[in-house]
Length: 298
Image (cartoon, rainbow, N blue to C red; front, side, top):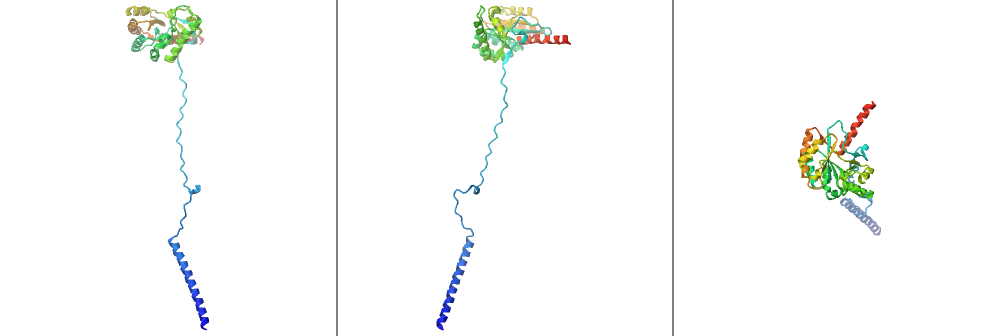
């Protein structure tokens, strides 16, 4: 009897101990779960792209506005109307306006600056026939001539008055044209033969190259350096509309010419004259003929 009881008691004791251990284990796990609700996750090396913040997109700056292409700068051209190309002109035939053209030969030289000062003072313009050798020596003076609103022309390189070959004529005129452009950025189709010689080969070559050969109708011979009063008197006594006056800004001291201009310009202005360049003078002659033709055709 006692042996059976002992077996039952032992069994109950074992069961009770097992239950206590089970309850104790469950309680311990519950407590641990409450104190550590999240199980730490070890950091992930090289996480996949979808776990990274999306990178900021760099917006490139707007490119600068493309400037509109500028048309190439057109060179200034001193040219007569087509009807005067390859022609010799002594004066213009003007009927409806009192205009006159002052021209200056043999520059540019430091004397040219004195001429420019007088022209600027009286707000008039002229035409300067330049030597190539002087253009090479004084390019800045030539540039000032054109910048002041004056016209420029070709007077050969050396001022030869003797007969020349076609090759020499080409060198004399073409090389001077190159230096006109280099110093002023202008092209000119105005030619004046040295000494007014028309038969030594230079004028013929110029005409073949479509220059107008510009002579003159008034020559006070200022190259001989007469007095300023004599120069002024000669010009004023011969002045007429369309006239072309020959003066010099090279070849020596031109103080008499400078002083004469200071008397000539105001006096002719009082008489109603306007001063224009040779191209302007020839354009005026060409323009006044057109209305006459139009009236006849009506």
